[in-house]
Structures are given as structure tokens and as C-alpha cells.
Amino acid sequence: MSEMKQKGEKISMLTAYDFSLARLVDQAGTDIILVGDSASNVMAGNETTLPITLDQMIYHGASVVKAVNRALVVVDLPFGTYQGNSRAALNSAIRIMKETAADAVKLEGGAEVIKSVKRILTAGIPVMGHLGLMPQSINKYGTYTVRAKEKEEADKLIEDAKLLQDAGCFALVLEKIPAALGAEVSGMLQIPVIGIGAGNGVDGQVLVLHDMLGITQQFSPRFLRRYANLADMVNNAVAHYITDVKSGDFPGKNEQY
Ligand code: KIV
Image 1 (tube, rainbow, N blue to C red):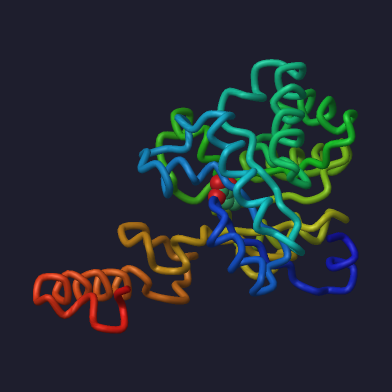
Image 2 (image 1 turned 180 degrees about the vertical axis):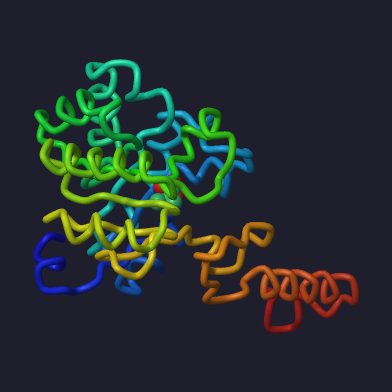
């Protein structure tokens, strides 16, 4: 990934949580597949990412890894599995690597979790950082609005980004921050910075697959570009199927034994 940054080649990253969609995302050529803890919202219908468990992330991670032939697969460490102490963090990361065969883990935070980051790295497990809007800290911030607009928070983000790079993280996600700050951090770091709502001056972009495919409908932040409207396609196909079943048109002569 750092060679891509050096060459100025942008990195594409998308989430996936299951075998079937991960296979399509991989075949289409995505560089990184993130088994995000957004599975908590998208797959399980929770309001936040907090309830998802390590076992559930491992289930999603293992399903994705089985489908992927070429992309790098990164699995999120869920809330409560790495913040407490570095030994617990290492054990959580080892379980993810052993039980999913993923390539790396991602976790949220800077100075507060740096001991955990370092301990995971000592076991040879690659770590991707995540700063800016950190959905696992929603109860601290109380809102999902743009982060680091004020100098104090921007300065802390810059310090945290340096700490994560110096500790040995191979890449960093920046979520929902001003574009100028995204570009500044990307320019300052050697490791690639992948943005979601962090502007165009970073080294790559990530979106939640179900959002960009138009499967989820209520979520419309400014940074989200929808590349399809699968919700309408699914609704139409299901309505058509129901009509055919009710009318007796399905199954036809060639659709039975
Ligand atoms: O969980 C997730 O999907 C993420 C991305 C939004 C970066 O962390």
C-alpha cells in the first residue's frame, strides 16, 4: 500500500461482511476490503457499532476471507475488545487473525490506545489506525457530525496520526474531517491515509458497500456517492415475483421437473 502512495496511485477500499458480496467486490478489483464494525448497523440493524461482538466480527471476517482472492482483508476490532488493556487487545487481534485468516486489523483511537497498538504489532499483526469521527466513541461525542473543525481537536488528530505511524501502523483511516486537514495529514505521513468524508487530498477512499450500492436508504451524508439504487431493484424484483406466484405464472413449464 505504501508503494501505491509513493506512486500517487489512489487506494480503493470498500466494506463487505459476507461471502457473496465480498466475492463481487474482490472480483471488481477493490484494493482493500474492510470487514467493518459497521456490520453492527448494516447487517444487524443496531443503531450504533457498540453492540457487535468479537465472535460476530470473526463470523463476518471468516465469511469474507473465504471469498477473496486478491484484495487485502482488514477486520475491525469491535468496541470493548482492545481499549481496556493491551493484553486483551493482543488476544482479540490474535483471535481475529487465527479464526478469520484476515491480513490485518483496524482499531479506533490515538494516544489512548497506543499501548494496545504497539502490543498487537509486536505479535506481527499489521494494524490500520482510525481517527476523526470514531463511531465507537459516539457516547463521548454525542453526535456523528464533522470532527476536528477546531484547532485543538485538529492538533490532537495530527499528533495521534504521527503516534500511530511511529508505532508502526501500515495505514490510517480518517473519517468525517475537513478536507484541508485530511490533505495535511496525508502530506505529513509516509503511510497511506484512506478517507471517508475526509476530502480528495488523501491517498484513497473508503465507503460502506451497502450505502454506495443504495441498499441502505435513510443514511445520506454529504460524502456518500451512490453508485446504484439496489433498494429499488430489489423491491421491483420481489414485487414481480409475488405477482407471478399469485397469478400462477411461476413456475412455468420449463421451470419444473
Ligand atoms: O466500520 C466501518 O465500516 C468503518 C469505515 C466507515 C471506515 O470503519
